[in-house]
Amino acid sequence: MIKKLITDALPDKSKYIVGFADMTGLLHEKYTGYGYAISLARRLDMSIIDSISSGPNKAYFDHYNEVNRELTESIQNISARLTERGYENMPVIPTVTDDMTPDDYHKTLRMAFSHKMAATRSGIGWIGKTDLLVTNKFGPRVRLASILFKINILNPGIPIEESQCGDCEICVINCPAQAATGDLWNIKTDRDIFYNAFKCREKCRELSLANLNERISLCGICVSVCPKGRP
Image (cartoon, rainbow, N blue to C red; front, side, top):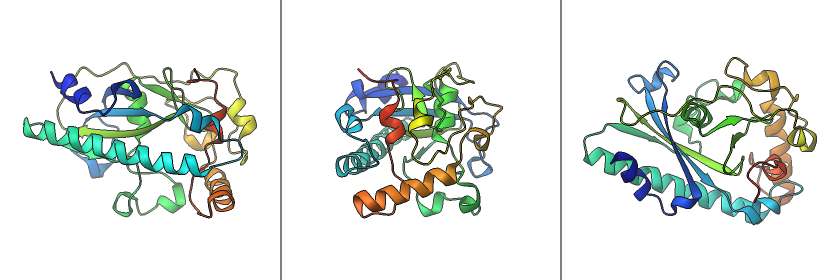
């Protein structure tokens, strides 16, 4: 019944993957009391992603923002329906706001909550070599949002604890920032071992300024070149 309530609140079920994760002991102290999460992955438009060859273009920028708005509306709608039924929850939007940014963010580029962690713990996908969430169904061509819970309301998925990228290095080779080492992710491997978030951010801002006249952290090349999720 709860799962149907969630999927019925989505604008187009065919574009979403829904997972449920046990996050016990994994969340930042600001989320004390919460131990479970719904993870939503919303597919991005294939033709728009295919059009990215040298960094973000206007179509991708607009689509990125549109999907973020849709995801935010979806989790707020789901949250309201669950609250009406007495399930205490906290929606976590896909975009970063000032109140969500930890004090040490500019030193670490790490948020207090990781949508990608919730997705891997729910079994939706794994972390690729350029730190993307890669799903079997849509590849990395997704945006993520989450809803946190204090109690277990669904059967958690089977966590994915290591990369399934194997020897593929297409994203590593095509990354304009050369931010990835090519090493494989697993739950015991720190992000900084296989991926330099600072190199990525700097190149993203350079490309977005050149292509969009906006200095933002948006690129999309590694999303576009990944063979996973292509029709």
